Image (cartoon, rainbow, N blue to C red; front, top):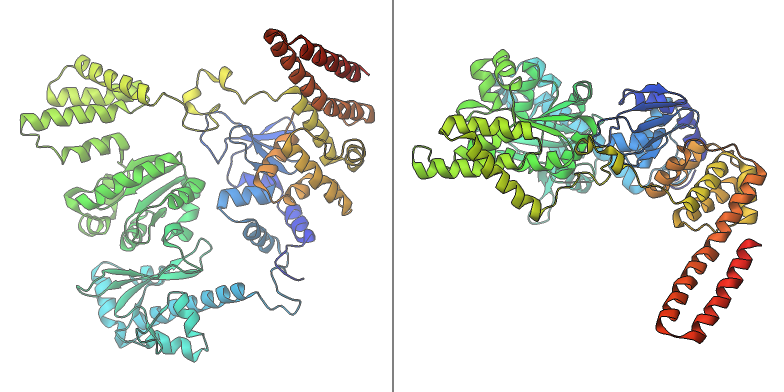
Length: 611
């Protein structure tokens, strides 16, 4: 097998092993509805099920967001994998040999694949090396004492593979060099640093407690090193590499993932020690960013795995300000956000050490506040509430925060709190809130938050007028043709002979072309396999949308011929409408000769259509 192309037989084996109901059912609660299975879409927020699975065709389709495809595409969407990654993962799970991606039959990998494999091995070696030094050598004695002072048990140290990088320039360098690793590649992978004079390489991490960072599959891809003592920077991360990207990595995600999936809730911490100590306390769905700003990529990873997020950042001003910046990115993905408040400017690690794990679970984790409540609490810090001017400004800004809420009940709840605390009448605050909302409405007219808004919460009670757009009749004819073509090779052959690429919708013409090529290779009409051959997200969605149509009559030659005729008529019908518009313009302008010429063309076109 040459190149990186995945063999068709491998894709077929993967789809045969991973049936669509079993694959989707691990993430979505499905209920039988006739020949379909239905559930709430995992890819967007909705109140009533618009997500369908068709077992006999091996496909899923959501009428709300439009996503669709086979079991491979579902795995890609839900896990964030590329097509090759999803096929590889599912093939390994199914026991299908992964032989593709090789440069030639001898089994030699491409250069990038070979480098990635070597770096994975080197990171695994480095993690075990650092861990050994911490637990078994004189080098790690001070670091081990420090960790135990912080309440870290041997079990936790083992579970999180914590290690120690000695205060030497070449400890890891020599360790890797003895095992014949390319030091240049190790530098590219973030394990070593090049000397300033270009004469060689030195260890990137020295005299630091080492926290391995894993990818979603549990492979070590980077490190974070915490300095012993007061040196700077306090934490040093591996640089971005072909294995590691800070903006897309979450610490402990590989271990937290089962708990996140089960509870549909994730806890977001700031630091590695917070995650580890919270794990010890019983919080097994906690993750942290890599000492960098929270990104939209981080939010998207969470959205694929959870419905709610509890932000548990440090209780100091910097931590709370960071939480405030993180909230909009999480809410933008449709996640419901809560904030756990830590007293006395403490971080989670400090709180657990002082008050114990049960208090942390009971007082902090079990009592998060809403985003609005958090914003009001944070707002208090910027106003002097002992002064009249400070109280007035706080109330005005607080009402503005409350005015952003869509729910009238929630608005009244918080306005009542402000009314009681500051001795103002509820009616006055409601009037202020109303005026702010009116101003907001004029600047930003209210509309659904999702592009596909027909099935979201804001449309509850007015869904009749917000259904998906009706497909024009001639589009529907082409969709029926493609429906038959995807399930019957003879239908595809007839359409090819009678119609070719003369579809009037661009995506329909493209799908037809793919179908002609698919059957030309001798493939059987298996819709799930055909969809895998498309490798184009828009066409995949179009195909699954067509295959999910209801009440399509069985394929018959005479009906197909009539549909082909309808498709061929469309260009003439469009031309007829254009000529009629031109005739009206000519009549109105008094151009009698031009009007007569156009009238003759109209008569000719109408005769052709009748015949």
